[in-house]
Image 1 (tube, rainbow over the protein chains, first blue to last red):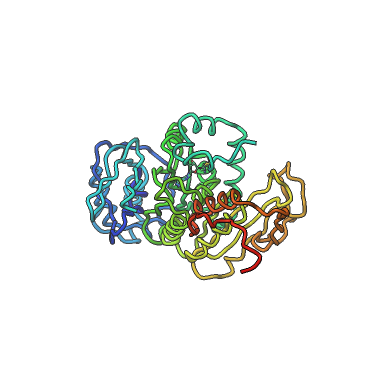
Image 2: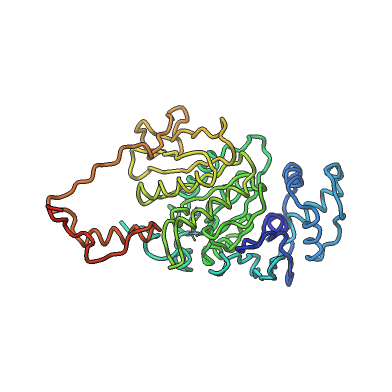
Amino acid sequence: MRLLTHNMLSSNIKGVANGFPLRIVAEKVIEKPVEMNHDFLKNMFAKLDWKAFVDASRSLGYVELPDEADASMLESSEFLNKFHHALLELHLEEGALVCPETGRKFPVNKGIPNMLLHEDEV
Amino acid sequence: MASRPELQAPPEIFYDDAEARKYTSSSRIIDIQARLSERALELLALPDDGVPRLLLDIGCGSGLSGETLSDNGHVWIGLDISPSMLNVALEREVDGDLLLGDMGQGLGFRSGVIDGAISISAVQWLCNADKSSHEPRLRLKAFFGSLYRCLARGARAVFQVYPESVAQRELILTSAMRAGFAGGVVVDYPHSTKSRKEYLVLTCGPPSIATVVPSGKGEDGESCSDDSSADEGDRTVSISDRHRPRKKQKVNKKGRGREWVLKKKEQMRRKGNVVPPDSKYTARKRKARF
Ligand SMILES: C[S@@+](CC[C@H](N)C(=O)[O-])C[C@H]1O[C@@H](n2cnc3c(N)ncnc32)[C@H](O)[C@@H]1O
């Protein structure tokens, strides 16, 4: 799972008011290089919750992202490279996502978060 | 013909390791799923500006449908309930991120962040009650409600579905409308039993020009062996099948009998309808005098 997906995901447990962002427990992180697309990055920048994104990148051990960012930074190729790398090239391979409200753990195996709810959570 | 997979077992059981492998190594299936996905993507009507969009593939399986999204330059997140199908997707090194999840439990995404969604040959599974706790109506409601929330305003969702009956199509469609979607059904090749394909085309947000349902392919009885080369110009305005007159049911002289009524009641229960309990009065003939 990439941080792009993490930034869109929230805990869907019944009764949880704010399930975002899921806390990341990282056991194994891998990198897979992909081609950069500026238009996509710009499109995504507008939707991203930057703080959650920075925190998530740090929990994967990547500390290059600035605490705050605004759209003007998308002109800098240095920024774009880091943004691209954190958003699309880092993968949480093994670990867990933790619901911020209930502490419920969603395990991540082979890069796939298990978001299935128990019957009493629906 | 083999019976419908949805009637054989729950999806996570039906799509086990063997079935997932069989499914994904059939060149016929690969070909069909790719065509269905191309058409769904076309019906999504994303802006033609070359910018990759963030899309969902619901019931992504082994990634056959997602591959079409990647081939067209888009970024996608796939959700499926079958670990075996997802394992095959991993082996095939698909580009999308994968989630193990049940669409009937609702999608856990933030509001308004997704640019579009497709689902190929999957949503009809929601009409089954595979567990005693399953209520198709509630599961459809959870699914469409959560999908509506996570889509950007004006974004579309296109589902290719194989409804089992008119009632099932109606159930899916009304659930979508209740969630706030506008849109309808597009039928390609309505005159062919084999090539006939149905797509639910839904738009998120207040009705606008964009919510006009596109037309189906091959409505003039155009030959279907050449789906892919179907001429755009040949399309006519699609019928929404909802408005087709239903076939009159033939009733034999003796009426249907108790067994038939019990069976029907059971079926309706499984679909999540409220049905009166069976009793000794069920399907009993009324006396002529009251
Ligand atoms: C016929 S396959 C299609 C897979 C893929 N879309 C394709 O075109 O090849 C249907 C898929 O829907 C999935 N599915 C069925 N019910 C589901 C549910 N409730 N939630 C998520 N996925 C489901 C099945 O596991 C299966 O992988």
